[in-house]
Length: 359
Image: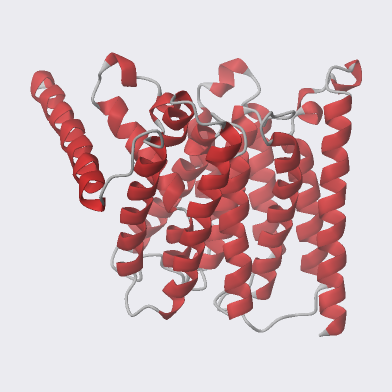
């Protein structure tokens, strides 16, 4: 056990300092001609390479564990990393970038084919082929929409680090394998190093494709947890991200001119426009994510898979609405809830009107 702990600690520390130093080099020499190859200058490259090296080292150095329902083959690890890198690299070309989602869907389908035959995300509710198709769609959409978190400094780092810390806690609680928890810790520490340079005022930013590739690998880690029966936990961990994207997307569907761009529709962007600084917004998002991590960890003891998730959605809406209206005097919970319901009704009515026009 002591040897296992030393291996994990050594690999994690190496990953953190390697990523931190690499980000420091990129930050110092960002305009240097030696960064002519676009993928090398891409901030995602050190994230990808250090994470791949760290996960590979842990996979082969850690003693064999017997805490898994389904074994993780190295092919699963390599396929996820190679798929993410390939899509990121291809998306740097303008002509290919327009097919960005199709590339992520293809990558998700490829990785879905490597899932254990006995694993069913929806526990037999859907036919096997539909279960797999749904997994691929969720995986690709999760990755593709991750770019919408990058409209403000610190948000991507917070939304990646905090849920992955939740994964580490799940591993300590025995809900997921130690190896999966270690993989999550590698990414969490690398993104913590990134947060140092991405915090307001940001010195480094991920590209759109790099952000999406990070989302793809985050979804892969969540899928490893889902294979062990912790899908509902990872859902709760991701509620802030899910609520942000769906809410912004619903506003876009209203077809109002002011809502045609997704990022400006998000709660965090609206809050920034109202005058709150990005660092304070990121700190508040971290607090929300930390609370969702607590909910997600309690989910392993819950009698069903939806009660805490529903409570988490309500809490997320309330918190984000409260944050967006930070300049408004304190109001009762009933007033805030009525405002949220009113906004929802208005968006639904706008969508209905537009659908009627199309018909």
